[in-house]
Length: 286
Image (cartoon, rainbow, N blue to C red; front, side, top):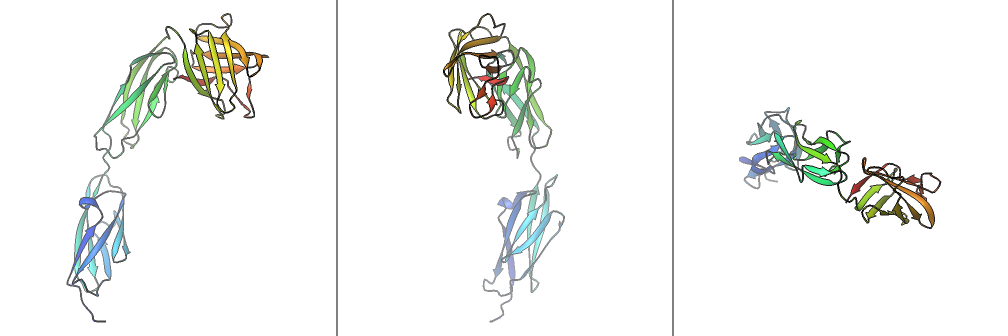
């Protein structure tokens, strides 16, 4: 075969605008002139061997990079077997971290057993990781789930806090005031059994005088009426029929937003075949 030496080589990259986030990878391609050059073996080097690792790949290269604290320009050089050199500059960028978080609440004051939604707005808008973790400064007053849904537990004041997930340590918070429940406790409350084997639904109606219980996994259900003598404050005790038997006791504690279910003998009811119970299980007003 005729030997055709390369007279020029040009490098191009998959990195948009020759820029990548440090710690991510990219590829390099080589174009030879003339196009039929037979001198296609390449030696790869860079001026930052501590930041890039170049692996030859089918006439081009796959480049692994290291995370950087500040934006850094790396020069990569390709040298053909006959000494022709091509160069390319790649900028490794540092992560754009969160600098501030503004937390707002759908309502800054809610009653026990009610809910509101927390929202976090991150600065800067182009931060690489805008996710946050939610927490409450006092879960005995209010708790917040991973989606920012806040549930009031007991009267008091607490902070609903968003913490940046990018390792910056930045937090933001909003103040929530929880007040005593006023008016009716009627509504639909949901919860999960102690060991998590089944969800259950409690319906309270007629100004807190009647209740229903439905266990999702088994389809068991019952109807109950308020036992005013056994009830006190925000602890409501309902007695009634469950499946086919009488005397079952459903206790709804709205001071702690929990529910407990017992049979006629006062023993904790075992959810059929699940070997699970409803004892001080957290409930949420829907």
